[in-house]
Length: 236
Length: 236
DNA sequence: CGTCAGCTTGATTACTTTCAATTGTTGTGG
DNA sequence: CCACAACAATTGAAAGTAATCAAGCTGACG
Image (cartoon, rainbow over all chains, first blue to last red; front, side, top):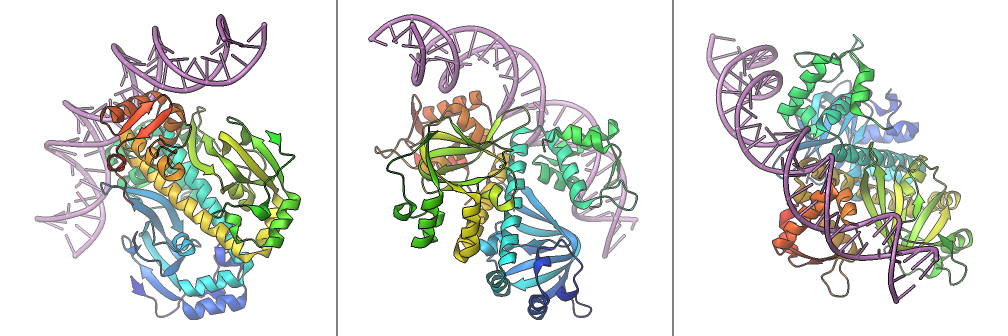
């Protein structure tokens, strides 16, 4: 983690149109610019840990990260991802809880840190922002409940296929239009699908044998997206 | 489902102090009273189905119900419960989605149905209510993510123990201070824990053999709550 | 060029589901 | 109030699935 001292990303100029803050006016953005702080986080760094008191909200300007929780025996479960334009930390901040997940950087990220007070003031003064937060939470809740039913009822094979579909929908492909645009380890895929590293490896090579995907080291190349969706047995 | 025509529960007189609407003033409550409609739902009746368009918000005056989703093969997964003082349907209404779960009555319930427009107007005019909604969603999201990690990582034995703990915390005991105050079938416990009816039955009789609980027909009598919590392997 | 983390494969074990058959309980109409 | 139908609970045996344990491999990086 390193503070950005020159060429800071400016909220007033931010191009992340899908960001939750897209509803803010110029004055509000100027307020944020005057209060926020910008950092570069490297792969593997921890932005916050579960249990920590929630002091800030984090706006991802670029990069990719995972939100995960630890199970009793220390096994990690990925509950959500975040990428450019997303904010994280709002759940805890809004309900005044400690963070209940760990935020860990998967690919180097530029992150704007907005103090709790600044963000709360914005919410209080901008009705539209609070509605946006409500919608964001609703969406998160919906997908968490869907994720729950998937993990509870699907086979490992289906869950791994679905995890890949999720990654594709979220991060898309690299320039070649077929390699999933995210550096992710087998063990992280296991943490997302709720299984073990070994089983993940075996299942991925099955998929590879079936010509659904191709594995080239860490790269996952999608050869038959439809078959992948079919294998995932997705309802919506 | 039968309309209540006399002695309707009145929002202005409602004693459910923990209800989300507890922040409303007398005028707002009067507005609701003039717009809402009251029904008695019998055990087994469906209040809404997943996929239905969200027309209303439902305020539980008395009774108990489950929110569940159907998996691909038709197996039910219970995602949440609701009881007196709770409201349901807000998730879909707030994000303008169809309902994504089924609401099914477990014990006869009196339910006030508030039209979408009325509720939305309240939210727009009462900043405190919108904050309450945010907190409610945050809480739901937190517990959904916890439920997810439990289902993903715990053994069936742990999950069933945890399900019982959840039921006790949510519904408490009957007058005898030891019988769980909820009529629930083995198959519903299975739907909550994410397992099969048979395994649930076997595990419950294990617990019974270990003197953790006692089974008397449908009644579940808790004999050693601490041991149950220990068996559940609960982190928070 | 050595080391460490991540990846891979095989064999074994344990847990859970599935299928099938039986018994028990409850609510309803005659 | 009884008989029956429908649903819920129970038990056993067999089959599958995925986790665990153990060991060797590979590739990236200082």
